Length: 453
Image (cartoon, rainbow, N blue to C red):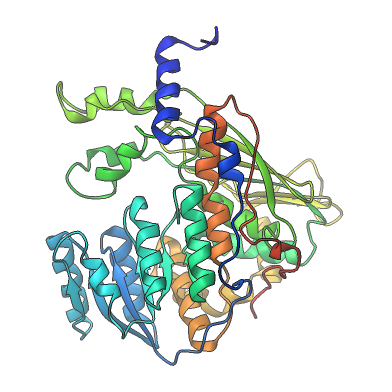
């Protein structure tokens, strides 16, 4: 046992590594796979005049997506699925208020398979607990549907490859719905980067810092009923994509560069055990849980082109929300939470930030065209300040106009694989581990995401 690690911490670390089967599997995690289908880099599907959709999972996120889809032109909600009757009933009432009556599938835990069997669906939205994402997406694609899935898209390296392989075999879209990429600030920064304002991009910082201990009170139903248990199983970055998605697009990850290898460290696990003792009575099941996931994880990534990226995750420490959203170039830097900017030669000094009202001229000049077009409509419809609505509007627009999606299955795999690889690194004294090339070399020729006019 290392001298600087207490026995309790050592047993937690060892137990977490054994539970995930990550010890000594670096070679297996890094392996590529022979291609069974055709690349979907830049994939364009047949135009759809009307997008006929089904939704699996109608809780907090799913009901929000349903509300937006009901408002979008060119969408028909044909089928819904949820195994929780009160949730299913609320969704049906939501639809009836909108003047439609889709078929509800809620006859047991596997009724989603029967929904996917329908031949009148073009796309299936998967909005369920994490461990169901890949089985549901793979099944939908194999049955001829495009798959749209909540974050993270997959939990293991093998699951990431399953999504890639199936999308390529079936020639279907498989998009992880990273909504933060459609935030106003993130779209602005993407435009700043594409316009060369920050110079050559060298380093990014992405995070998901969000105190979610309150979810532990959701016992029988709701996100906390299953997500709380995730912290007892694994130790790493369990939720990397909200911060990583936008920064990956700024840095042209999978489109001119790709993430090469990572190293990861986690702090001790303390906060959830303390919270359980303070908030739940003696003998309560929440007080019996053995939490192994470090309270904060820091993962460092090196790209093939030599750039660096820091990804942090913390869902339990008492700290204000942040995603960092920092991108550093040779001519300047943008940092989020609060938003601030320095551009050499264009702002007063490199020693002081431009903030608040000082950013207004930058928004006037570099507001993303997509936000100019749909920003007010997005804010009116809501969903994390409008980013949810804008994301769904853009998905439907691309499907109806035969355009590539802004995020593809390779992004879903690359952004999600941070979780299992960070777990391996933490369990192996923070050794570096290679990140698979899910594009199988296509990143070298794929064009960066453009500024949608």
